[in-house]
Image 1 (tube, rainbow, N blue to C red):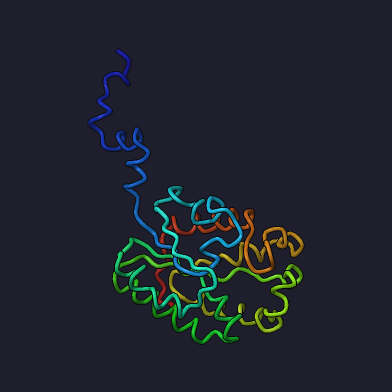
Image 2: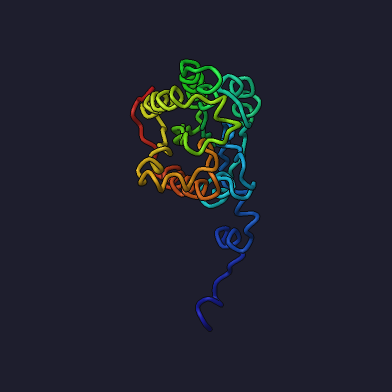
Length: 221
């Protein structure tokens, strides 16, 4: 008798999960992705958003809690109901652009992101905080160009990213675009602020490589 016929596959939970993809998916840990339109997936299909692309690819089931136009203050208002009360295994923060565009400063974003990250870590939730992806003024549509002041937004984004890079659990998503040639970077943006489908795919691959690796343990902020 061949070896494989001697094995009792149903008696092995690992084999059972392989034969039942739905059960395997449900057994994954849960990650809540919490933020603004960069989490929601503005102007891309739901299936093209980076959270959907990662759903089940790594160790987590991804739950998208992104809200278009939300500031970190708005996130703070829904933080308990959508993050700490559900008690996920992990949380991924990506936000700050709307603080920059709406308030013209990042003090609130720094304070709110630090508070929410600390609350998660204190509850034993694995915590990731992403840097904000680049802005491209030359791609801004006319409807946005009149209300978004890139001459102040760009340096504020760089300052906020500098702060986030010092935080424990930082994933420097911005760098996977910034390290590309300048003309190539434009091919990943839909409107100078948001990622297009190609941008979400690149971000998903970068994020996956970091959420599946051991988290750094420096004290951070």
